[in-house]
Every structure is written in C-alpha cells, then in structure tokens.
Length: 232
Image (cartoon, rainbow, N blue to C red; front, side, top):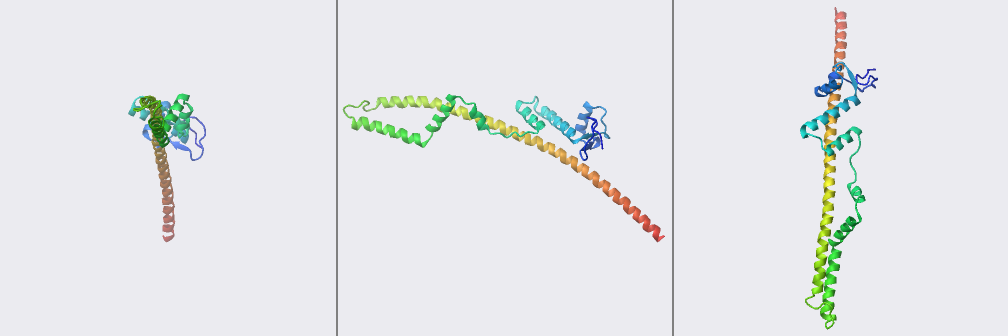
C-alpha cells in the first residue's frame, strides 16, 4: 500500500496518484506547499482534487481580479460538495413586511379582470344613480365632479402601489439572475474538475493497457523461443 507524501497516511487501493501523472500546473502548485514532492511521490485522489479546486480559484482570480461574493459562494459550494439549487420565492416572501404584502395583493387585484368589471360596474351605477334615479336630489350631478375626484385619488394612490410591487418583482428577478449565475458557474467548474478526472483515468488506463501489452509481448517472445528450441 502506497503512502501519501502530503499526509503521510496509507492510500486506499485505486486512490493513489503518482506525481508524474499530475498536470504540470497542479504539480507545481503542490510543490509550492511541499518542495520535496517529486514525480515519483504519491498523493491520494482527494488531495489531488483539493489542489485542483485551488487551481480553479487562482484561475478565476486571474481572469476576473478579486473574487466577487457570488464567486466565493460557488467555490465554497464546490469545496463542501453542496447543492446550490434553492427556492427563491420562499426566502423572499418570508422577509416581506406587511406593507409589501399589501402592495403585492393590491397590485395583483388591480391588474385583474375582476377589478376592471367591478370598477366599471361602480362607475356605471354611480352615473345612473345620479343622472336618472336621483335626478332632482343627486349628490353628484352631471358632470360628476365627485366621481372625477374619486377616480383621480384612486389613480394617484394606485400608481405608487403598483410601482412598489414592480420594485419588489425586480428585486426577485435580480435574485433569480444571481442564483442562475451561481449555478451555471458551479456547473462550469464542476465540468472542468470532471474533465481533469477523466484525463487522469484515461492516462492511468493507457498505462495499464501498455503494461498488459508488454506482458503479452514478453509472453509471446517466450513462446517463440520455446517453439524455436523445439524446431532446432
């Protein structure tokens, strides 16, 4: 059983990685922390993955400068192997104040056919009542000044309420966009890590195949020698 150069602990079977099999950039990264690490040294697959993640972090810093908070969240999720998908709406709704909830409900009702039907029914009923039913005793005779005042007040109040709800929706959309960005970035980095692992497996597999072929060639040479000895 091979021993890890980094932790000095035994490495499980199939988990050992020789220094010669590691990419040059990651190999140099390990040598910065452990100068004695060489091409003949061994480390575990988990230790290699740790330095792969460290290399990805350095790449991101070089490409984007200082890491943003979103990028740090993504790298933290990769290190902890955690899932980033979450339901945005539940977290946002839980933080709403009473005024914000009322604004959302009023805006929802104000943009529905129910409001339109009720509103026009009220206007028609008001006009019929004052123009025909209460002709001589109308409390708001034509041209319905009181009705115009009520409608103006309603429009003045409804506009800022709708704007409040739209601002809330914009905040929610921004959170969704940030969340989608984090998920896409994490997927991209995970694909890079997966590509590194596949490359390692292919190199390891090719080495094994070459070893098998060498053994087969030796075996064939032995058979040829025996056949030549018998023929002679």
